[in-house]
Length: 229
Image (tube, rainbow, N blue to C red):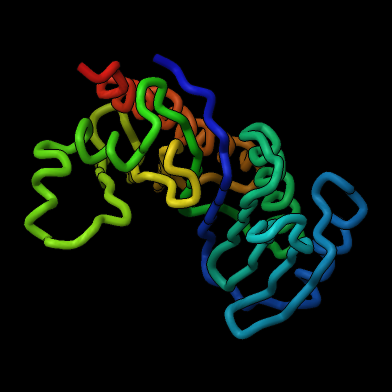
């Protein structure tokens, strides 16, 4: 069974060798990005934890930002219309420009995450779906706590092994804002060193993380998403 994911967040954290971060050089990155409407950030802020580029929120809770720290660059697009292809383009172009401008020679490690919502086909309450179908014992086992349950979920870690060169963390939980929706988060951690000239290769790390969502994660959820007997 396949689902139509409603992706609500993409994130990327790319680690590079530690350096002295100079705000005026980051400002050059900001200026170059501002010339490209699809990649531009309107705000520039120097803070104790680094330099932040951001766009004003378009809806409550939305985030569009790039954070520059002495040893990493972090990009976030949350609660904004953004496809996996668009986020991959943003990461490759923003980080590539930053590496060239700041004199960074390579990316030492990468972490990508995606958060999506899906609606089970045969269940209208995701809390009941997780408790009664995905977890052994169901709601009856929760009676020992003696108080109502607000949410419940699963967390799994899949280490590097064999042909899989990444570590994956998976979380499956009900979505509190809408009882019909299931919240899925996949975080992929990669330790391959990528030189700046081949930085386009980091997009495959993002796609691998996203494929874990649409492939084995959807397959796992669908095993339990069957009509109630």
